[in-house]
Image (cartoon, rainbow, N blue to C red; front, side, top):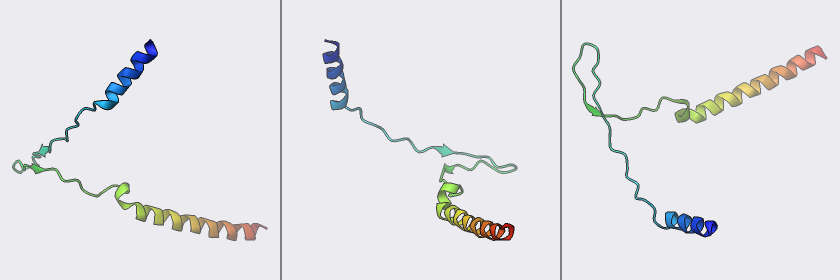
Amino acid sequence: MKKLILVILALVFLAAPVRVLAEEVEIICPQPYGGGVVCGVHTPVAAGLGDNLAVVGGVLLVSSLMFLVLSKKLNKVSA
């Protein structure tokens, strides 16, 4: 009986999804030092590592190749 009730409740939740509403646009009004209040819509700026993944990957690739070359040279010198 418990399993039947659980299955019926699960089917009800799957069959009747709730409508999802989008977030409202947030208006930010910063007040710079010595200036007036500036009101406008916030626009994100590409400034993180996630925005420059190709550059990060290239730097890691070049540095790993440099370490490989250096380790081979040092291995030849010590052997």
